[in-house]
Length: 140
Image (cartoon, rainbow, N blue to C red; front, side, top):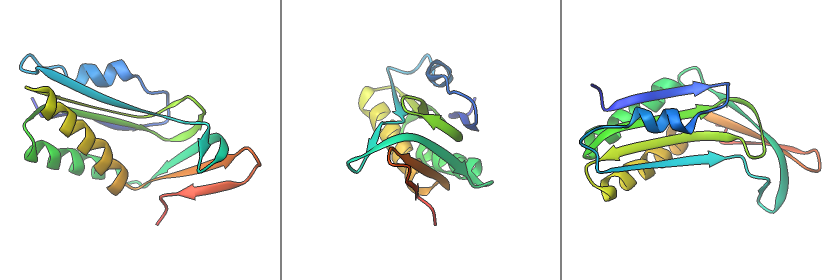
């Protein structure tokens, strides 16, 4: 079985339990997950909604990130799912999870996975503020 068990972009609500189930492994002593939610503010301004758009190559970029982490760290499994489309405050935007023999390894892998995904995968966010203004974040 592959170490990278689930990677996807979805325009439907995300299921945290699905991502956690994907990294289950009998050799794992630690499972760590991160769930990113749409918050109601950014930079001191109120936010009403977000919209995520992804480059057609975004899933391939996600896979490359996960495979690199799997090759560099002693993990049993990795999973990541990111939303696209229009999201409301409180919606789940991204879920990542990692399992490893020990908790420290699982924490390190989950942190690297979310940080590297945010840094290198071409997914862009449009924020709509309470005053009606909009802002694109992460665009080239």
